[in-house]
Length: 175
Image 1 (cartoon, rainbow, N blue to C red):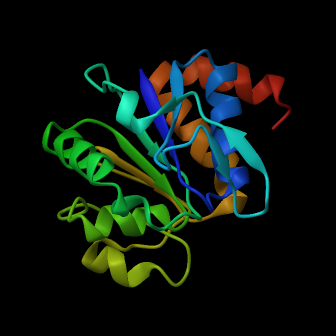
Image 2: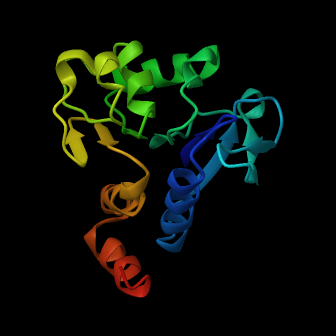
C-alpha cells in the first residue's frame, strides 16, 4: 500500500491530481490525515475526506510515502517523521512536491541526494537542491510545484506500476 499524507493547508491540485492519476493507474493508495480529523481543509478552502487517520494506521505494508505541498508543517507530526526516517533508512520510496521537499531536508533525508522544491524553500534542501522540474535521486522523488502535479503523478505511476500503466493513463487523460 502507498500512502499520501494530508495536513490542513495542503495544495489541493498536488494532492488530488496525484490521488486521481494513481488510482486511474490502479495503484493502491490510502490518503492519511495527520490532523486528527478525516476532513482536511486545503489551502484554497477545498475540504477532502482522508481515508484514514495517521494514529489509526499500521504502516507495516507501506510502499511509497507521498507528501503534497502547501502544508509545510508535516514534520510537526512525530509519527510521520518517524515513519519517513525509517522508510528512508530502508531505502523505500518517498515522494514530495512543492514545499514538502523542505520537510525531507529538515529531517536530514536528502543527504547525498538531489532534489527540487518550490522557490523560496531551497535553503531547507541545502546542498541537495539542484533545481529542475521533477527530480529522481535514489529513493527520493521531488517536484517543483503545483503546475507539475501531473508530471509528478506520472513519474510516481511509472515507479509504482510501470511505464505501460503510465502510458495507458497518460493517453486516457489526453495529457
